[in-house]
Image 1 (cartoon, rainbow, N blue to C red):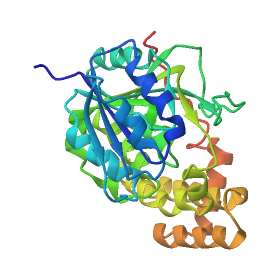
Image 2: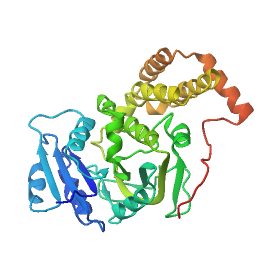
Image 3: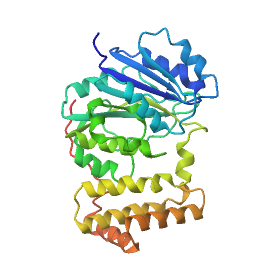
Image 4: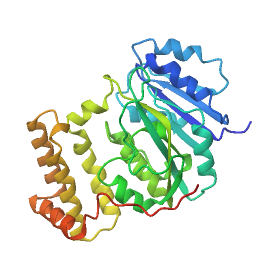
Length: 324
């Protein structure tokens, strides 16, 4: 029996209300050479009943019901990866859903670009009732349905150094073989594990593919963990480790490192509304400054760099190499 080309990891916790929509959007994909691995992290709602109703599907290769909640999305990802047999992996978050052509288009791009380890598309943001929100998180949107091949080092520098521009797992397909090379560091995080994983996967290949077509539907609702984590400052308290590691791997000069640290710290100082209160913002700023061995002088360096060189880190256009 041949292995499926794509392994789809579906981690779920208490998303019974959205599960039918998600599973249907997987099983009805126009591309069908896949296996579906469903993991439920000890849900307390009726998720188990919904999952069991799909068990007759031959596409479902594994269903794992935890007896105890793991407390970590990324530990569930790690468990799912251990069962995967496909050449490619897609993490289909349980509260989102996808366009039925998602796999067909993403797999084709990766199959035709062997030096690329990761490809991602754009996303619609939707509410609890599937209404598309008037928000657009996609950076530098280009002509609809165009694919851009980008140098991986350049992409990481300009789109992954300071924050995670690949903002939802459901928009990503990547090569499973790359997981063996990067280890399980992503599973050590509570909030930023996806940022760590995407950054590492990008650096495993020579190129990164972005498809400027909204094939993913990223749901925003009150029970999401990420907005609460942002208010607690976790995007910086955890993110500082990823930022520092990436900074070291980019082989910057000492001056350019200080400019980058200044930009990281200034983003904390500017983002008052993203913290639950002033005390949290101050705590996060001091924690990051101490860890990065930074100072206000680094912020001054960043300001001077922005004025003299029009900022080396923000607003830069990646060289375009259109695939179609």
